[in-house]
Image 1 (cartoon, rainbow, N blue to C red):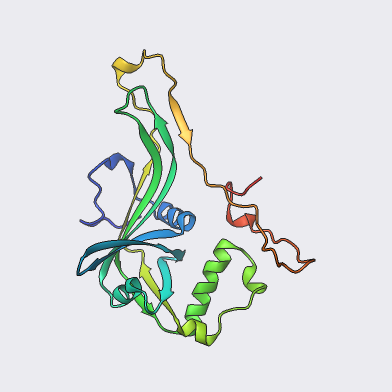
Image 2: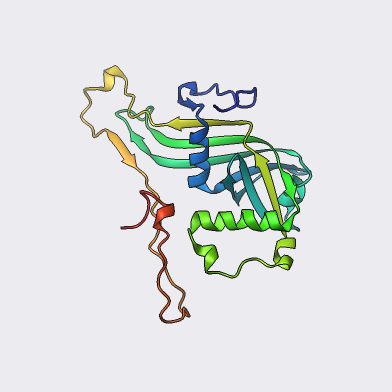
Length: 218
């Protein structure tokens, strides 16, 4: 069950609120991109970042000179949003056109992870998430590369989830209008793999489809 705090309370379209922790995990795992808010002297800034989950933590990584990483590694409060767009709702009236979506908002502060062994394990987890089995084939990060990388983790202890999958909600007076009504689905397609031009001849194409159930190119 997701935490319920003042910051996670959903007032607008509260019927779309979901309190299942598994739904939060699914949204993060499928999105893998977080929009992260920081406050600078010039005002608020929102920056998109690759983000991944391991158990009940979400992680981001970047260079030491990144303004985002410099700000967040000091433990300031922030907010992450994840959004998956699933389709358009085409109604009989302009007013009731809408969208199907899944979204999550996570509040908290990041912890700086300095141990290179742990850093290596978590970064490799991300690679395995997007391409299962790949860490067995590639050169893994060395100490210099790990030390040059900032890795931050945030516990998923304060979050809210909204899922809009309500279909068409037309007014009764509009039901007799002669117009097509329904859902225009939006689906993300993954693959097929595109090799580089200088790939060594004879290397077999790997199969990463298991990481993208229902979304892999066919």
